[in-house]
Length: 319
Image (cartoon, rainbow, N blue to C red; front, side):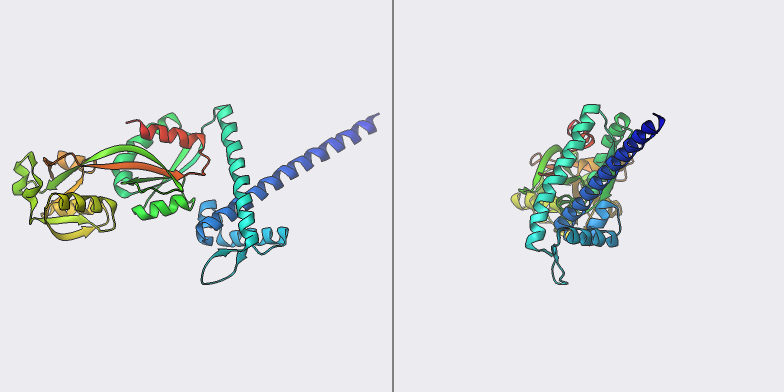
């Protein structure tokens, strides 16, 4: 009787082991398919490695393993351009469905258990990341301390690339561009104001007409930055010609240049709160109209949003 009991127990242990092995193998297979999808979308071994927090060598090994498993060449090995083979394209389409279903399952289980944890990867332009985002992150982490929010500061075009390439979960930009692959979440609008040195002749005015800055030395953003394009349009529509003397890729350097009296500028109001309070910069309202910089969040339309990301977006949309 004891022997039968031991035999049954041994079989039960073996079945459990097989069950764990099967579950582990399934997890590994899904992870490999996710790596393959990320590689197909980013067209870069290094970026696929970055997304999945593994080495480039590990990415290559997983792709080779998939090719052996399916007995098919998945990627055309060419130095000129990354390209999936026909078999690779088929595998990508089905792999995307599988990984999205798996992500949906995880998200649903978390919602069922009311568990909010994990990591949210955010790419943001400098001005939003430095001036708008911190209080929202503080509020979010106070409510959900087990969530890790990882923030990267990027130029606007790089934010779009990171979101489309699955490098990040969410992008934060100004003047969002429509894209059929992206979901755009409108956030708040940031008022544009004129700034100058406190000793500048314009500083004595609370508000001015744009015509008053014609011919002035102007510190601007670089031409490819959306805020620069918007300011150029405002000046053009009001027939105002200024003298660009310096151009920078971020608002912090623009402010420093204005502080040393190199010129004046137009910037988002939220970025100058500290400088105005310390009186290192003077803020002047623009009378010609209310000019605002719209802010927005971006994520891929086919992305399965985790419960943590849903809550983070809800906080961002709530002033």
